[in-house]
Image 1 (cartoon, rainbow, N blue to C red):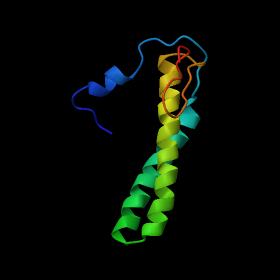
Image 2 (cartoon, helix red, strand yellow; image 1 turned 30 degrees about the vertical axis):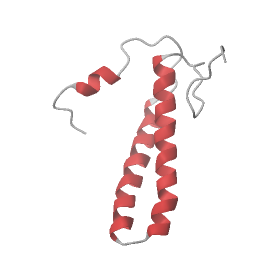
Image 3 (cartoon, rainbow, N blue to C red; image 1 turned 90 degrees about the vertical axis):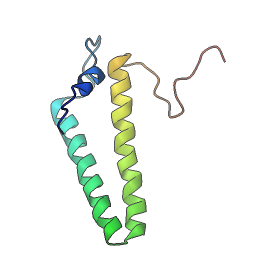
Image 4 (cartoon, rainbow, N blue to C red; image 1 turned 180 degrees about the vertical axis):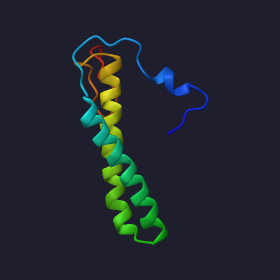
Length: 92
């Protein structure tokens, strides 16, 4: 990925208080899995293998959800609630 505008830098937290949630190896595996699935999905769409696309699409979304959860925990804290519908409010 190439970021000619520098916008990606604003997505990286400047400070993080807490233990590292993601080591380099785990992050690299997640990154590679995402791009494998994205390219594989494109090939299957071209081949009109739509059932395979449906199954792999769910896997790709799981990888993205994991990435978003890790990012939110890095920004807020390791104990930040990443429930699938957003943070739960204690006030109802």
